[in-house]
Image 1: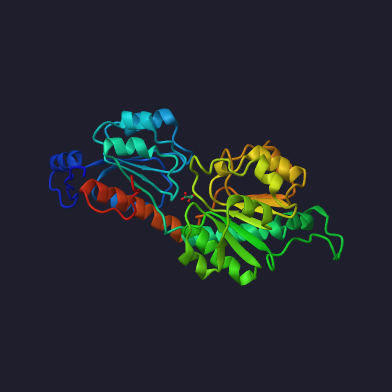
Image 2 (image 1 turned 90 degrees about the vertical axis):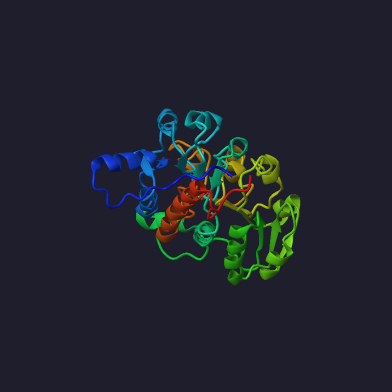
Length: 347
Ligand code: DGY
């Protein structure tokens, strides 16, 4: 357990000198985004000296390395790579790295563990928002909403036509969930009212209780890729899941298969996906996450009609993002005080 830091209150200072002394005894926190909701930053400012990167683009690495030096805690986002070099630059007083995200693959947690640095993240709070966005993306992809909407503006809409802009319904389909954690379960629950024939899931270990609530059947990866009409990727990015959706996997999929990914771009071999979409090996894809992010404007995926791409907005609902900001702040305050964090990565 790291040593407790004392938090000096900042109210009612009669003299400027006192204030300066108090401030210098407060823990120092560096925040890599100026655009997180202020309610989180306010919580930190009451008890810590807070400095922030001041542009809405990710903090350049050299700036991060300079600014993190001497800090007691780091408030970061998935756009920041927190590795050995950053932790070395911070110094041995660093007690906490807290990310405003549920994913933490951008943090070298093993390095944190070695140094006794606690890692905070924001699971649960974003589950519903992400499940909702996944459904929106799925429906936009299978019913070709963006493609159809373009026709309204470009003159492609000549008249109602029986087979024009038809998509593939969820009703009676086989839906495979790749990953069945909190988010996967909530997505599955939202798919049930669309009356699929079957929901299957692929996970390392069985989750019979959770599966029972949506009547889902556990299958191995091969069975899922071979038999699904929809595949929803909602797993964490790990060495095991990295680019698991490979050329080989796409070759096994049915030609009407639609792939939805709101997890991490790295789970999919994007070149293989492009080939599969271009050659109509699969029907379509809906992606909220890509490699890299942002996707360059000349990326070949952007030339295809059968892909819908969103700019990583899974958890982007206002109340969710506000609460994520507060949880990240509370995680830091708890770690600095040696208390239980709202959500701590088990190291
Ligand atoms: C996360 O939290 O990991 C999402 O991808 C961004 O909100």
